[in-house]
Image (cartoon, rainbow, N blue to C red; front, side, top):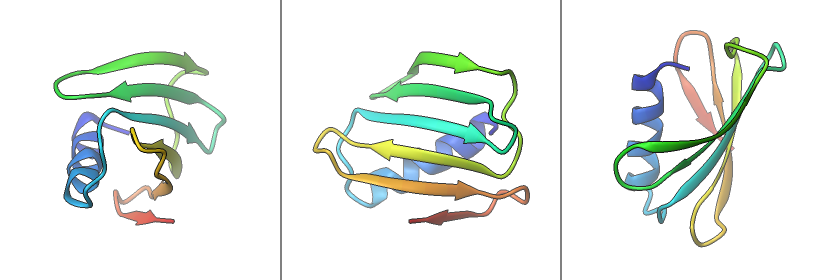
Length: 82
């Protein structure tokens, strides 16, 4: 996942009325994983395991109110919210 994809995802959450901070865990098909807490401004890295994430990537997101979703990011950059 590149920085622009992360920014696009955060903008989508803002547009859906989600409340910050967001806590995100992303897992690539190769098992690599990263955790980030994102408030206004820069995100805070919580952990990283296994190197670079390989597509497709599943991202679990929880907002400040406990609202949660899973987002699938495909190789072509398209996303699906579940």
